[in-house]
Length: 237
Image (tube, rainbow, N blue to C red; front, side, top):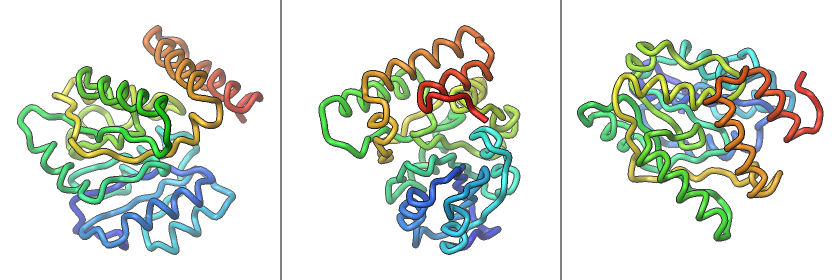
């Protein structure tokens, strides 16, 4: 699974103290042929880098912030197809075929997978339904759905926005200028940890508040501080 220049798909994973999640993700990708994996680490202190080295994938140090890390990984990748993947999200076994098939459809700028949450309960099924409706009908997937696109298309829209938060929304809105955003028929499996941390209702309301702030053009740094306080109860570093 060592990164190879002949790979046609590059999976770019931003990390920050995500050793256990990264280990599970990379173990699941073991055996995928012709795949380049780039871990863009934002300064982890928990052994994340050691996990990446043990699995033999590409590892690069980046400025903290998901947008900066994704863009850093993009610049160091070589694949024709790019998959931007959160480390707590697992790709379906046949993801590569879905990436190629989705992006081969005429007028397509980018794609993403359907969302499945790794937890039981009607509340999680409702979240899945809402996410899949939003991304399928409105063309607005979020980063936990593994957004993917051809390298040339991402570069044509200026790369990944180097924002600490809401970089996925900004990226998708850029990509929509180049064509349609399509939803692959397969689903990724994402961790329920962020909903479990604050509770389903509070997390949903926080996400909607962040999106509203973005659409109202509230300063991104202010939104980042607000989001951080809600999750950590102290200002970001």
